Length: 188
Image (tube, rainbow, N blue to C red):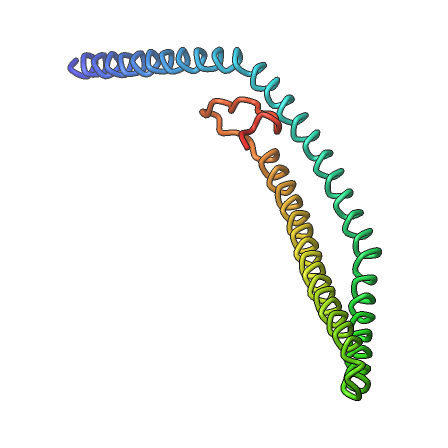
């Protein structure tokens, strides 16, 4: 009859083990329910913040697209109107300078009476050189402006791409949501 008390002890030990596991499971379920309830209370505020962020990103994207279209239009207009004329003016000025220099060399040295003409021609050459330098400076400035505007457009495209990537990334579950910030509220 020693078999029966051993079986009873084993059954009692197994029942005790099952009771302890069940109690542990009940404690874990209780914790999970508390966490679920807390997340359920926070979910509407997270969804509202997400909707506000999505709207802000959408508005900023539309503004950036408008700015990009205006910049492209401005660059096109400046290219069509300004650069061809600058090159033509530089060519005309160089031809004038060559003609004046040739004229001065031929006629200016023949007689002393032409000295006043020579001085006027030299002033004209100086003026033409000044104009050429100014035109070259303006052309350089224009080309710098054009490259800056092109880089600005590329920066806008990169910013738009980063905003699209950030909008697509889900926030970590344990991180608190960042406050919504409008583009005009940023410090300069």
